[in-house]
Amino acid sequence: MFNDATALVLYNVAVAGVVAGHVTAGQVGLSLVLALGVGVGLGLVVAIATRWILGWLHSATAETTVTIAMPFAVYLAADQLYGSGVLAVLTLGLYLRTYAARSLTSEGWLLGRAVWQYADDLITSLVFVFIGFELTEILRSNSASSTALALAGWTVLVLVLVRFGWVLSSTALFGRHRREGVPVGAREGVVTSWAGMRGVVTVATALALPDVLDSGEAFPHRDSIVVVALVTVLVTLVPQGLTLAPLVRWLGVGEAGDDEQRRILRRDATSAVLAALDGTLSADVPDRVRWAVRLQYQGYLAAQDAISTARRGSDHDENDAGDDAEVGTLLRRASEVERAVVLTAREEGRVSPDVADDVLAEVERRALRQLE
Image (cartoon, rainbow, N blue to C red; front, side, top):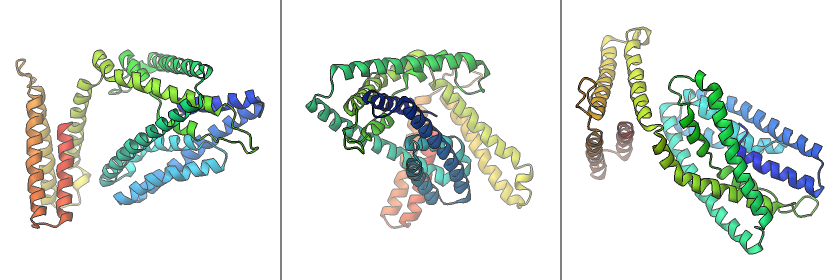
């Protein structure tokens, strides 16, 4: 959970303090342990409580509001307790991302996903605007000395090498015990290592350093720390980011296997519902209700099999390679017809805006599933 970007900045802060003689190495060690322990511990406690709250709520709006409010709350709480607010938020996010989905309603999951995707794009854009301002200021003040740039270069090199060493060694040690469906191998390890771009966390942490200490003195080596952080972000983000897609294609990682896993998982989920309808799942409902739900899921299953065969071709005919592009084209055209009908009905006043929006949301969700 200890993010390498946060570790980088904390380490530079610690070294700067020791070199300047403001704190002792023991004090630095105690501060880092306190930041780590309080940040991760508090983040975990709040994450467990948040998961319970989400399970108690049954409103998409309320669930999304909780997921937005909790990161701010845990950051402020950790900061007041002399812990790392960044690590607290990171721990909260990792826990909820892994375990909170079962506590959310379907509407809450869809709404939260849309809100957080938008927030991620917006915040990332703002951070890189701040990077531009900070770089301009650094260039004007000549803070980017040769020593700072050399330190930044070594930092980037160490980060990349350590990530490759850590990921590839972990793959070699634990890859044989992987769960089915989890892609762990040398090729995936290389992609994971190369995809370790630093960004928002590094910049936010570096820019959050104060200009002046409580004693009134300038924060030691702040400009050098900011230079290291910014150069690390730019060097690891731009070259690695631009070459990541070609690397994935060259190594042949992901795409075909992911499509097949999606198909199998969707079929398994639908088949599980049909099997459960024969048991206690529908024991207390009328036969016509059970038949209606069964018919719907049988339709899902038949549609999934038909679409899969049209995309991939028949397993019994080696000459049938499938028509994936044509299926995608026709599904997009069909979705456009649905959208046109719904929007026309709303514009002509034949249905209320709320009804039109609900139906349009169903159309869009189905379109997303079909076109994946």
